[in-house]
Image (tube, rainbow, N blue to C red; front, side, top):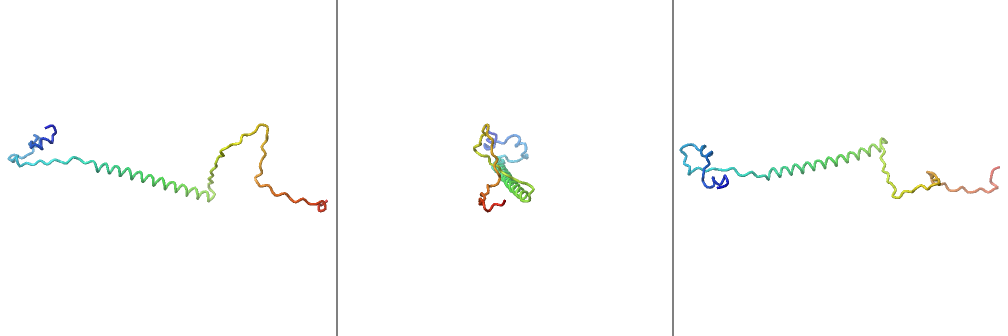
Length: 124
């Protein structure tokens, strides 16, 4: 009998339990009931449920914050209070040449050439 509950299964009554039995009791009719071993299924399932719920709540908060931020940027840019631009860099970059000047480009497209007046129509 190496396990403590093996004594109870064999019908032996431990000393601490024997002292609790009232005097005059027939020990052959005594039934000792043991508590069932603890099950860890419930606490583990509860922990997993709490973790999953926390992750879901954080995802919802992140989504709502993104929607609110997008709406705020659109409202502020529509009212003129904020401008938001995205600049895309060119993949290839021109290197400046030594000794040459860059010509400035006009911001407007060139206008079509005016028709040339004949000499007779010119004003003197």
